[in-house]
Length: 209
Length: 107
Image (cartoon, rainbow over all chains, first blue to last red; front, side):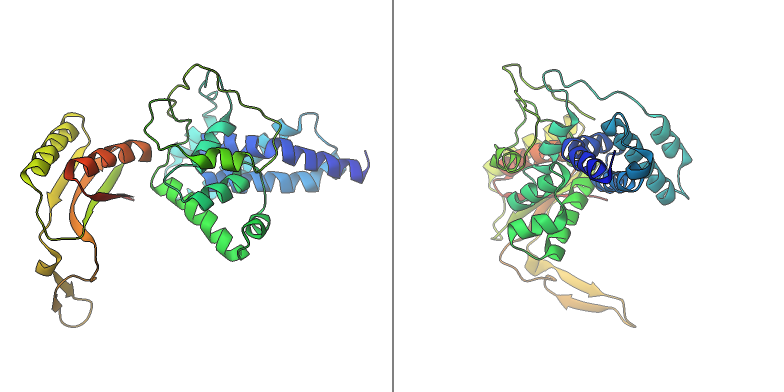
């Protein structure tokens, strides 16, 4: 496989796997920032390694495993002094994702978290473009015609609010009292994805993580 | 997880008897469902005193630390599993006291 093919494989993996990697790490670590950084590091590792090691047979699994390791490394660094037990739990907690019945996809939860009505509309769209569509901060800043630093700050603030205010990582249920949010459809139509979600007539269950 | 639900109002008017009844009923529910931590109504901002004891001597200043059109009229501290639950409770609290509220998480 020549360099151009490897580059193509990495680009394809980025299109197809970015949101899945971020979503699965968010479920596991409960922290968007950790998930995003670890996913980015995993792709950077792929750029380094794939040209010499070759493209792995299952790029998605390779990226998820690598990102998980990066996230655990980061948690380990940050938790050095405190609670070993929590770390052990992170290492061995391999529970399968909770079933979502009709829609079994962490990415959908990620979208609902990024588009939570407690966030400003522009922030919802920007955060979704970063976390779900995998656009870079400079790309999003250009789309919004704002400075990169301002966009970076907005996204960081949103991630902090999600963490501090504990915005849940789940798909809202039919009975949920969240106000209808046009941002769900607005941001999902502004990036390309192969996934198609077809919520059937069955109400989406209330899933707590 | 605890949240501060601040009641925001723009006059010094106290709650009407109807509002008090609704607030009491809402508080009873908070207690029954295990969300209650604390709540209270506050005197007007004009009754506030600001104290600054960072220097050599404590400074007492009459009046609120911030002059604003809207101010804190009271608050709840609620226990809720996540922001969605807190927002739902806060929406009911806003209805009960007939005022705007703000939700903020404790760290």
